[in-house]
Amino acid sequence: MKEIVKIFKENKGYARMIELKKAQIHTRRIAEAIETGIIEKVKPGLYKLVDYPWDEHVSFADVCNSNMRTVICLI
Image 1 (cartoon, rainbow, N blue to C red):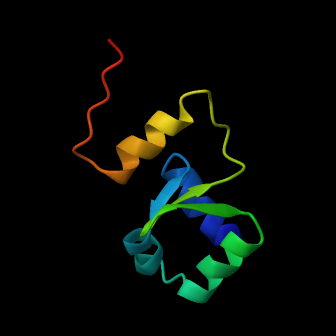
Image 2 (spheres, rainbow, N blue to C red):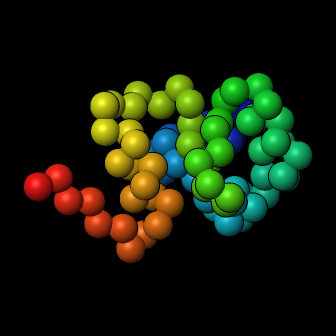
């Protein structure tokens, strides 16, 4: 699990399935990390580290990471 956490910390708390597969992390280990509460599924193919030091704007980050074409306007 340490290498999974390392990948997430290198990517500011987020990782995509493609990145995890490139690092040769098997899907069973990803499922195990979800079951144990280490990571959380944001959407299919996108995960976030639960213990990352998130701030009050984490929901905005979830939306932006879910779709790279997203623009958030707070006006």
